[in-house]
Image (tube, rainbow, N blue to C red):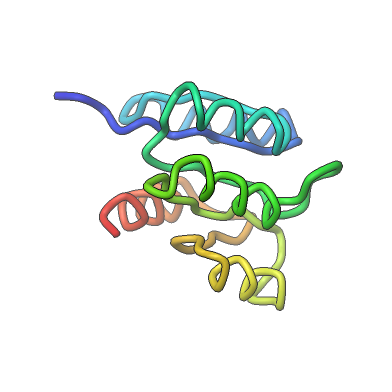
Length: 120
């Protein structure tokens, strides 16, 4: 059975590694450290879901999401943020993100959010 592919995009290496440890058994993973790299990987890897940090240098998650939607409108996006329901998170949902998860989160919370986002 084919595993869903998830692109993890976060500028923090530690968080990328933590997400890898949680998700690698159940999903095919690829990684980006900024929005530009994520957009390139959406073009070449066609992930089913992107776990995308909102606050990143150079290109933030909202701008990255807009580019991802142009490249592949079928790709789903789940934002990972350190902020509670703020205007930024609200903007993310209005722009087209499936949902968001607030750091810190448990492995179980992450898995539930990923499964829910992939079903939408």
